[in-house]
Length: 135
Image 1 (cartoon, helix red, strand yellow):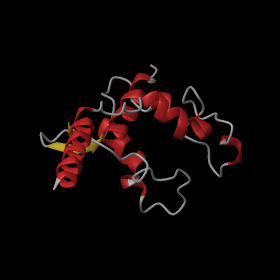
Image 2 (cartoon, one colour):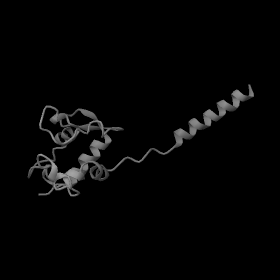
Image 3 (tube, helix red, strand yellow):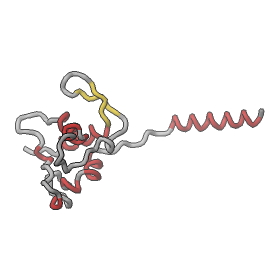
Image 4 (cartoon, helix red, strand yellow):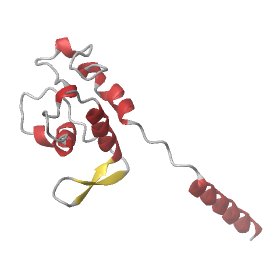
């Protein structure tokens, strides 16, 4: 009986400690970019990364995703990174990141007024790409 009480108490203490543990820090958009994109797109996002020359077609210049006078195409960019817009392109060079950018979700308005659960890393990366826009 004494053993059960001690075990139960230890389990309770462990559970409380787990609840009180700080949440892990989420990666920044810049960190995600440098880890997953810079090798092809370059550290500044201009398509001039160290692997770019060996690709069958040049990587996109990510500093020019927003047309002049237009809003940043957040939904299109996130869908492209995720692979949704590219799933039927047989000549696709860029990998799909749907399995890479997972984790806690944010509710994002995709332009239709409906909040869509979207993985935090995908949102963070999209926001970082938005900050790279020139012109």
